[in-house]
Length: 91
Length: 365
Image (cartoon, rainbow over all chains, first blue to last red; front, side, top):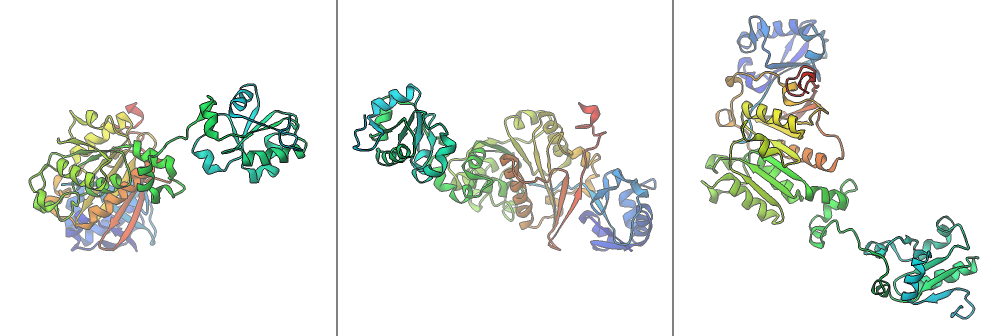
């Protein structure tokens, strides 16, 4: 199984879990499995079946935009990181 | 001509020495490095007496070349001249006079390069000992101008530590007043300053720590109209703002003016930090082309934030500023560092320049 790391703003949709173990041979399959386990997450980060553009997806330290997108192959030791921008700062 | 008994070299007065130097005598200073550093004859070569036998061959290979030796008063240079005469040097003179007389006679003189005042040398002594910094690095820090966008949670550690360690000019951009709920994390401010402008409170704290720091107060909110004026005079921008609009506005202006931006953001137990160096690495738009909806990007005032988290992230930002100013080490350009305070763990992902980036991509230039 691969691991998906859940960003802080989405943890309320995973019951507070910071990581979720998933199955799948590609990022798309892994996310499908993730959304199956935590359906509320699907509505937060997808639009019309597509992953929202404001979510960056990394496999280990590599942005899938610069690989094969959601078709990027993953192995059992890989970690998928979902990363929306964080705004919080000063005030 | 020897006035030294059996020693076949001449001793000369300061006035004669100045004239001989003007006529082409090669000046060799046989004092120690520390003496040389406090001022020396212009154009002279330093060759401490103890090193003379080993190094004279490389310094003066021609034994018939006219040499003028001097030290502080004429003792060491007399011994050096005698040694040289015994070893076949035919045209050696030694100045038998205090070095001050050389200056009085109008001899060429080079004052030491004063990088740091004596007070600065004392204050920054622990830092100038570090080989990558030294007095020259400290001078760079003192000459540096760093702008902090936000004098709040992330700005606090940067303001305090950058001024403490000698960043010469610190600009503060913030239009807020100090509130009680700030004090849990904004250590730049204080309980007896509630209601005071953050730029004024920040100035008080900075000057308490380092009266020498020049504090430039910008009591306004950064926006598209003022951003270029605000950042134009600074070398490095530290971004600790609290909303996406400001971050994109800052990014686009910084790319345009080619200012490095040290980015930090925080949320509850999590922090992110990276450094954007325009056209060398990615920019904020390369990393986040699209901003999330508001509900996925709540401010600290809504979501909450751990008190120590901005301290940790802000200190990492300060560390980036140091390296950018000093030109040493490796910055976080092209890397996003993520800190999870609950797990006490760091993760890093690589970020790339996007050729299609509207701010710094191929179409933007």
